[in-house]
Image 1 (cartoon, one colour):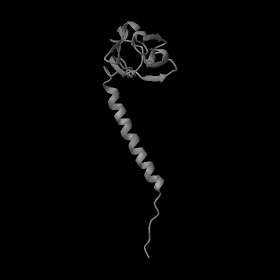
Image 2 (cartoon, rainbow, N blue to C red; image 1 turned 120 degrees about the vertical axis):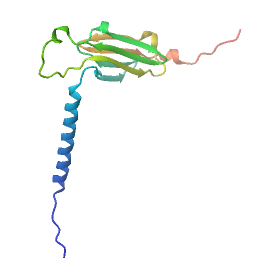
Image 3 (cartoon, helix red, strand yellow; image 1 turned 180 degrees about the vertical axis):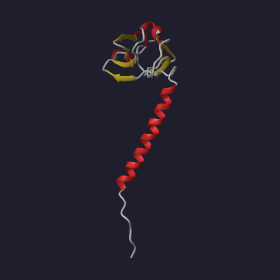
Image 4 (cartoon, helix red, strand yellow; image 1 turned 30 degrees about the vertical axis):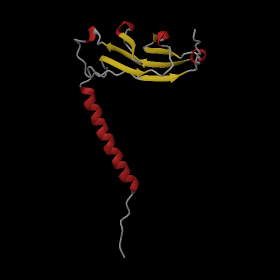
Amino acid sequence: MYVTRYTNPYRDIRRSFDLMNTLLSRFEEDQSEGIAGDFIPAVNTREGDDAYYIELDLPGIKKEDIEITTEDNILTISGERKQSKESEGDEYYKVESVYGKFVRNFTLPEKVDVEKIHAESKNGVLEVVIPKIAEAERKPKKITIK
């Protein structure tokens, strides 16, 4: 008869998670060292009955530093988050704020009114509203020949 040692499978799983957490925390520390120029704003997108909405978190960015363009069915939002002049000479112990240029591109859905796209910035959140073409405008139109 063989004697088998009982192993606790949960202990092995816990070791795997501990190893993974260690690796991820080291990766996170490495990423935080050279932060300048790595700014990528968080984005939320949603669809309403009459429009599509894109929201970007852009804290500390003036609306003059943001550019929104459309070309070939692509909406491009770009800008720059600049480091404040007062803090450039100060010595920090740790800097987690991210600065730099960013560009976010979005493929526009069909049947949107590109001419009526508008944007508003409030409390550090940029909201871009992309109106849908009205149902009446979508219907095929018969053209008579004269």
